[in-house]
Length: 544
Ligand code: SPV
Ligand code: MG
Image (cartoon, rainbow, N blue to C red; front, side):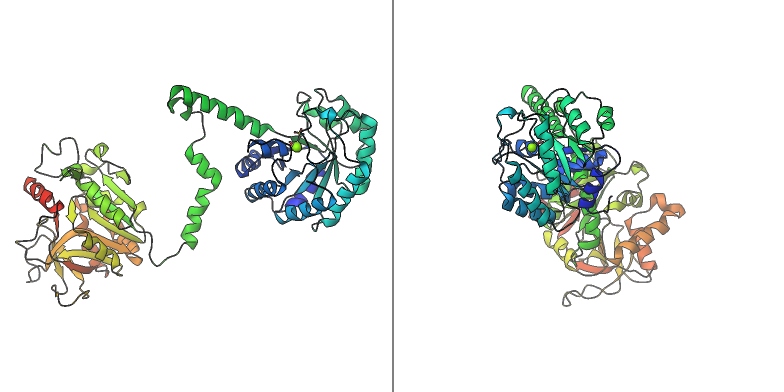
């Protein structure tokens, strides 16, 4: 990125010892494209700026509208813009104000032409156009130079004498007068298809100050000829707006005729290319640094890789999470619950028949090795989704909304939900018995209880379990790193291929990071067999 002031960059371009080139742009996006292509400057073409709004190049855009567009172009780029300032949008006084406003927007310089306001494009009946009185125009140049605060801001004076059919001598007379009035460069314009009159001007001019040309009409002239004649700056004046028009017309026609996007998809820029040009990545990076909040953007990870057992027919073509319960799949029920809680970043880890998973509104990652049955291998596929505030749960869970609400409310770094209702009444996986530092005491809301172990053993250290872990865990803040550390340790151990989430939780306890326990009593179920599935319908409809 060029760190010189844009005014200085433009001045250096004009005084470069070789012929330089700038290209037209007409909005922030095209300006950025000009810079990415490698150009060292941008032509803020009056024709293109007005054309993109489907108005004429007759000062139908107000000068403040022009300046507003230029602000976007300048913000989007680090190279200088030379504005095509038409006649300066009025008299010397308007010119002074224009220069000040352009400087405030870091515009490199402005080119003004010796016609009358409102002007007409030079290629529309050019010879009928009236020229400004030389002295009046010199006063305008001088007023602009006196108004600028940055000494490098450039004012280019454009001679329209050849366009208006006044001949070479008048063109030279005007060029010299404008140079003496303080112009930093002279733009000599021509509408002929051959460069002869421009080259004749250049020969006579003999580098009194930098010479600028716009070879739109004499485009077939080899660029070498411009170099040989000492041209300082060549303006390719309208070729991005023209290429945009041709591309848009072709795309519009094809979509209209085919009533489909198939034909055009490969021919148009991708949506991610739009995001790149907009600098979307920078915002994501900045959010990591600046968008700090005590309430971190929460994410959810749903483990849904297994087929499930004992439901042969129902899971022949789909995983368990895609079985409908009261008209809606288990997965969709979970996703809806998360979204209602404001958790929109949801990752589902699929495996068995993952192609049948409805991935609408979620990110689907696939554990290709799902058959080994390792839940921790599935979790490892979703580590990108592990944020500073993540809920991890099994995909076959149904639960009342308040359970998730409460889970998100508590502050602890690691939190597990344990159902304390009598074990013979509690639903759920018979293996996930929870041993905790204290039994559920309903009288003490938010009592500080920690998890000691999740196990299939009905007795541990001579005690009965305090309840059943429902398959739901939340990690926030430092909890994320504790979880990653524990997972990293287990990954290096021989039994990893058959490990489940309780193994991870038990490792957290062993590492001194025992999750806090949030007790509930009922109001949830998971689906392990056909009987559960029947009950699930009633549960989902709120009848149990
Ligand atoms: C423009 O690009 O708006 C110009 C150059 O002024 S021309 O259209 O050739 O007059
Ligand atoms: Mg113009």
